[in-house]
Image 1: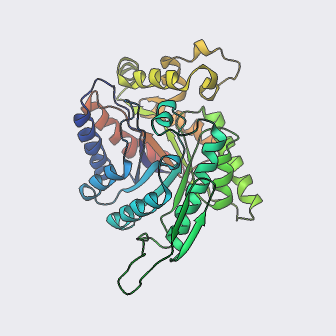
Image 2: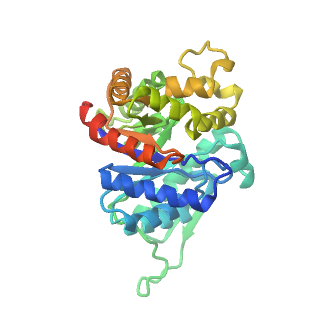
Image 3: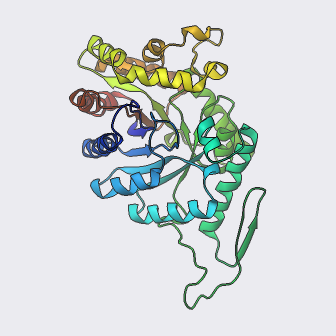
Amino acid sequence: MQLGLFMMPMHPPEKDRTVCFEEDLALIVHADELGYTEAWIGQHHSVAWESIPSNDLFIANALPRTKQIRFGTGVTLVPFHHPANMAVRLALLDHLARGRFYCGFGQSGIATDLSLFDLPTDAKTLGLMTVEGIDMVLKLWTTDPPFDFQGDFWRIRISQTDPAIGKGVMLKPYQKPHPPVAMSIMKGASMAARMAGQRGYMPLSTNLVHPSTLAQHWQVYCAGAAEAGQPAPDRAIWRIARNIFVGRTTAEALDHALSGTFARSFDYLIKLIGPARLDILKEDPDMPNAMVTPEYCVKRLAIVGDVDECLRRLHELWAQTGGFGTLLMITHDWDDEAMWRRSMALLIEEVAPAMPSV
């Protein structure tokens, strides 16, 4: 099992933003030094807990500070960007990274993000926009002008070119034909999982669902691959994100998680998701919403404890899912920097080596 990061990030709204960004960069550097293999950076525009609106700019800043860790947009929110702008910005980032880059795509369901950009709020339309946007980005990366791509939401064309002076030439990615593509997956019977399987994209499973739902992600992904005549997928490409904190003792770890910003972040997520969609967090669909509390999330959804307890929980996760390639640790606010640095070290030095590989 490989070990990486998923940086939403998670900072309390009252914390100075500049300090948050500096902390996030220091965390990435520390992960790189410890040997974490990859870091996925989230994107939102109007939620203070997740305060990176331009994940490509963040990655561009982090790249020269690091040596080996690969970065991914986790994810680029497709409906919020014109496909031509996405194509050239992500291609530039791939060159700056010299290939240390994955391209994750997805869509946002946060109402304030959508209204900020005057976007539709229904999931079906957003899904269609996402598919069309991805298709156009990939066409731009693999097609030379002149071209005219007409979709339901965007039209992209270059008709007048002058190869002698490079007029009409768009930047193509460093990796050929393009960076590996990933899609974020949340629901059990996810259309994103099916599409990712059909197209051979990497599945990126969210930290927001109970482990029992994760097994459905892989089943739907494999069904999509079979429908498209793709080879049987290799579980090594599957990324699963989890909230993890490793302490010297389980009592210490739980005390820190329940009394600090770790638990507060779950309070934010519960309220953001809202009563109508809380089922994704439940280990039993018949649970009343009132039982979905920050304490429940810390103890039942997150993996918190000493090395032995975290290993026990991860082996349970492995058995529930059938195995996966990379575990992505959700990054949290460094409300106690020394404890978080130690947790990251224990996770990669003592926990991860004791896990199986696919």
